Length: 528
Image (cartoon, rainbow, N blue to C red; front, side, top):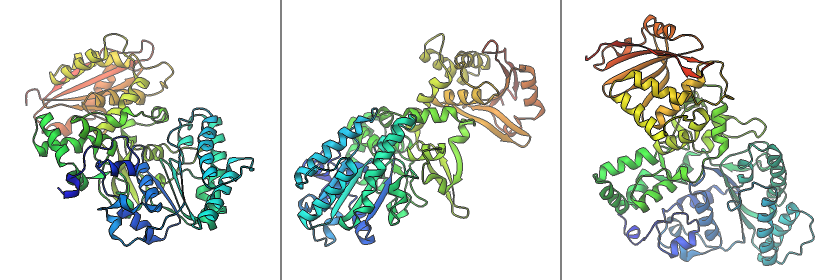
């Protein structure tokens, strides 16, 4: 462990002010080499998108103190060795994080608070009728008063938009006002040294992107892949003591502790080439408490995410493990939101593999924490337990799978499937596959849907240490036709070399009763 890291005390969980972190000697992972990259590129306008709670605010805070010439705060960090002259620039740091933007006046309140401070600081007489003109006057006044061009940092530039994706009237209002404010970046270019915007998404047809021909979007840039988040190398370099404490609490070895952290919090990837990234919020939370938890999920999952997945007319497992063109992830059209782009940009899907030949990416859920949180939110859209507590039913499902009791398994699944809301579409088996997939994955069961074989596709396959369950679902037909299809298409053939017992299960969902009809079950290769 590096000596300067040993001097650091405590984890800056929720602390986004670079100055406070440095003065309190909290753990700060040195990302200042990316400031050097920005300077060498001579970038005037920079944009970066990353999921929430990923360190964007801290990086902007670091930039703020850097451009304010606070040399003493950077002792021992990479940027201090580059020969930068530490010129002091006027910095306008517009932070859109504090508000929820559930009401139109929330943006007005936030802008008014920032603009009043700047107008007093740079002696601007408030004569302009609206925020866009007031912002333009502030930028010019800051340049005139200091003799230095202005640095503008906008944190979560899109939060008012992301918060209102399912509320069209508010969305249009916020988009119009923000577009007018951000248009100053072009019209006031002569007064501007540098602009950086961060957010969750890059929204197309917003003036900040259409007007700035020289905007440098580093969201997918290989050179900036690690600008936010924590790499494996940084984890081992900055957190050895935290890992040791976590291992001791969990009563596992250091290596086993690292493996647990990786499964739960690693797996994000933001470029064609680049390291896997750990979620910093979750990792810091785990280091502080020395125990695993779904920390990122506890900060809130936007309802638009669950609604988007619920409304997709597709196999859920396919959506969460899919392939698309790289360009499909780059932006969001507010008039027609691409669900894959939305899920990627908000952090629920990430890049798992890149195919250079055709510029496509394979997407997947980053890690265990995200999957559990996502499915926990999705479950109520599919099922509502009507009798028995969720804990007891879940326990019974797990036990029936492990004990090789397919009748009990289907009985308990029926309790869940009977709770599918009446307003859900009922025209095919897809909703029921999705419901089973969400439920079984959430409780830790290895389940797959639409499994391809040489002769067809199996609706659901559940694998346990001793048993394999092959389930064919029918909708308003009969269980016998479902069971017969398994045999006729030899769905269990790929598993015949397996030593586990195979259960063929044919079952029909009865639309009138909203229950599973009595399942028909056959045992194949028992005891082998």
